[in-house]
Image 1: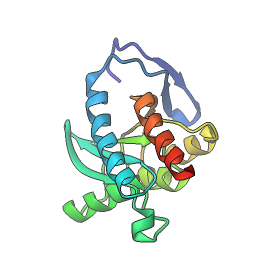
Image 2 (image 1 turned 180 degrees about the horizontal axis):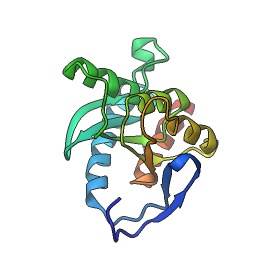
Image 3 (image 1 turned 180 degrees about the vertical axis):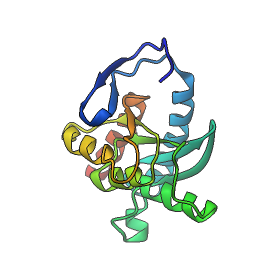
Amino acid sequence: MEPGQNRKVAALTFNIYVHFFYERVDNMYEKFMLEAIQEAKIAFSEGEIPIGAVLVYDQKVISRGHNTRIQDSSVLGHAEMNVLKNIAKKTGNWRLNECDLYVTMIPCPMCASAINQARIRRVICGTIPNDTNYSQLIEILSDHKYGNPVEILTGVLEDECSELLKKFFQKKRT
């Protein structure tokens, strides 16, 4: 986070910072979250839960992914896991120290562990389900055994991300 930006910051245990109440002051976050939303829309069109993600290095998208659990018949087909798999295949490297991951919904514990182990610097999330266990995610993302603590920013284009999920589940119920 750059000095002077207008965000409320809560410092939590394990030296991990979680930024709540994102305010629309940084177009960079929105720009890349819109890229993740495009990936989520692809998942939606394929009948998958619409979660998308992009990995950014040096202000450029270097990997993209969306949920593919149904088409892959695999529990590992999460957007975040697909992004990590794609970039590792592309570069031959799984260490992503200077990268930021934009994802339309806060990662699950499996993805949070992979993110920590990949040494991703920051995760920028769109929406957060009501049943999210923050303490569990913070514990996973702050595990020093695999790298530095991961910074989390939440609420970027939250309404847009939430609306896509709501539309998907409404469609499933009809």
